[in-house]
Amino acid sequence: MADDGDACQADMHDPRAVGRSRAARTRLSAGARGRILRTLRNMGERAETRRSGLPEATRIRRWRRSQLIALGFSASAASELTKAPVDLGEVRRLVAAGCPHDVARRILL
Image: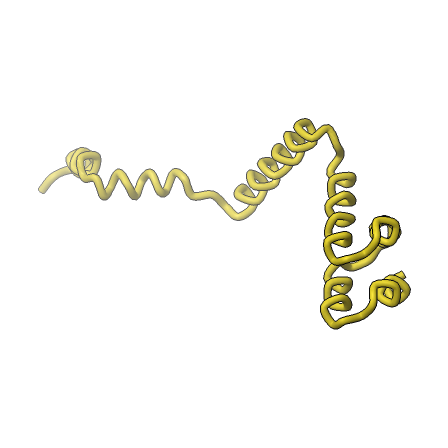
């Protein structure tokens, strides 16, 4: 019968044992995984801000305005709706249901 030292030596040469130990080393708790993901997301947002030179809030407003213009709103109505806390999904539903743009704007504001 082999002692524990011989068993360890045998496991080191077994590729399945190495794979298990590597997997065991890479397991993270849910909290650690969340912290890593938040850090990576924040790094990406900062990098995007540096690339575009614009804060995220400005980029979001511009994107919302472009979405409203694509739905058929005039530039001035899109700007007005962008400044208000309007649900873009609700705007899409109203327009898809055939609601005229001026009526949708009054409903939403």
